[in-house]
Amino acid sequence: MNLNSPVITIDGPSGSGKGTIARRVADALGFHLLDSGALYRLTAIAAKNKRISLDDGDALALLARGLDIRFDGNKDRSERILLDNEDVTLEVRRESTGAKASAVAELTEVRTALLERQRAFQKAPGLVADGRDMGTHVFPSALIKIFLTASAEERAKRRHKQLKGKGMDVTLAALSRDIEDRDRRDSERSVAPLKPARDARILDSSGLSIESVANTVLEWVAEL
Image (tube, rainbow, N blue to C red; front, top):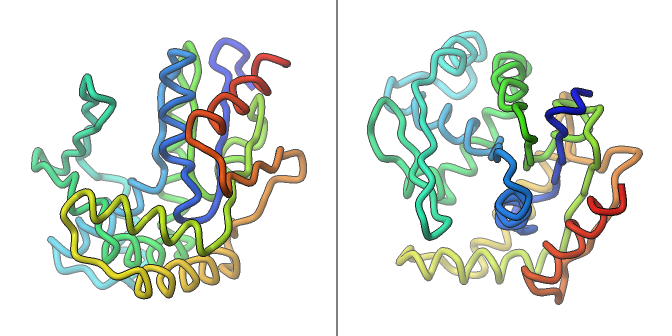
């Protein structure tokens, strides 16, 4: 591990709040942020734009290596995501994009193609990386590894509230099914499946506020 560029990993299933917590922690520490899931979502969007099949591993890997992407942070902690200089922020967050990204993430060729790209985010003064295999596969020597979880019911409710707030027409029942399907795919895939690292700290955020969860993670970091 590069002690001048420590890494904090926050892994967990869909809807666990890992992205929100990762941003809060990164802001508090002045660290860089890696939303690894966005890279798979962007690969899926690029594949759709270029009409590449989501089961063509070789073509998708080539596409993933050459993605022209940019993450622009805003003062209100929101983020614009650009693909080929086009703002795809809303498309990246759609449930349909997430489902396609989950399928893309099962392909060994794509995961290999994105591995070094993810590791390149490790820069001084440090990095907070969120995803599903950050602590187990991408940054196995991270300073601290968090596995953030919550009940499936609560995760569906959180996601429903978030998407409705963005004006997206979704039902709670559909989100619940989607979360269950994605949990199963992510946990059962043969390459870098979703699971806590052996040395991860498990944090169940059910019933906890964002501030409480973020403060717990920061307290754990301060103890090191």
